[in-house]
Image 1 (tube, helix red, strand yellow):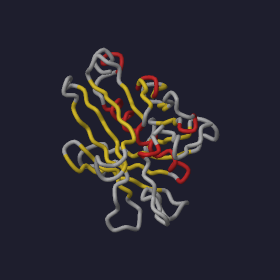
Image 2: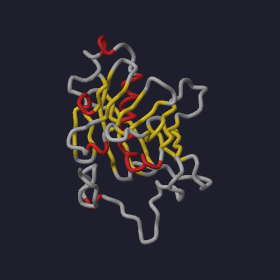
Image 3: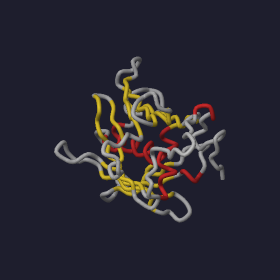
Image 4: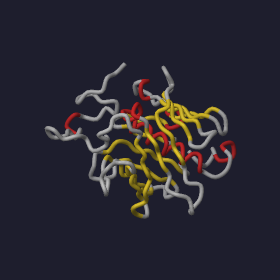
Length: 219
């Protein structure tokens, strides 16, 4: 099993692109209480972006852990590219991106330096059942299973103990509170994969029509 290091991370990001905390500085994405579940809210900040912000930290104005932005494919305006950066804006380290929509090319997801066909990286069992996140060339340690047949939705480790790593509560209507993601202590190391897989699942889940009738136009 691959162990992430500065020169070889599970996202295969070159070491020169990895932000390292200064001496004595704690990375901002972790709580001082290692046993505490962290709750993140998905907060829209502009017409085409949102921030994933921790809710239960002690800071009065907590900084966003992730910045999620969407842009149109100018060569095919019916297809959109979602990009995830670490931090509060697009200047942070790019963690991954994926493109989905009405386009002839297969949907793809890029994780650091690794590109996967989305249909291979993420598979579904049953219409309302489980989703399995198992991108190629990524250690099985980061493979996930999402259960969307209940609310909140549950994310588990795909192998081993299959422990619960996170819970997701989607917003059902405009009047609802913001969508929330609760991450358990044992899910923090997998947070990047939890978020990326969740965003792809929600895009697929919220696409109108049935898979057998829309697969010809939606990649």
